[in-house]
Image 1: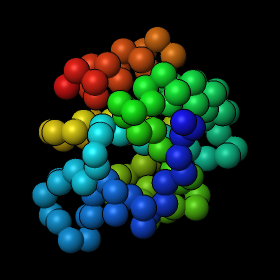
Image 2: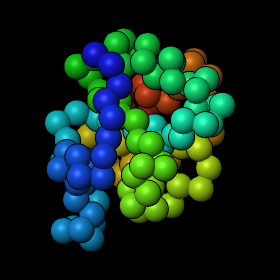
Image 3: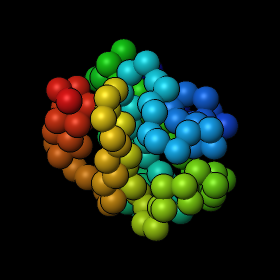
Length: 119
């Protein structure tokens, strides 16, 4: 399994429909990690292969998505993305958590374990 491209419409269907709900209500079947990135961003390019690798390691346990902030400006503004990469950790239950900046593979794995797998 590879990372999946996330659009605003797909987000509203599979993660959270912010137009219909004021309170956070996760619509997904399993925890998710969303990478907000841009094609020109060097740190984004550094973590892209790590996310691909982790999407295989955690296949069936979590879903990993990528949001191009230049193409999906509405979705980026909903989360107030000001720096990229920004990673949104969405547990099955509870509130999502945002992490700004690139993370090393080991730190990213630890965050996935803490925030998504063992949450």
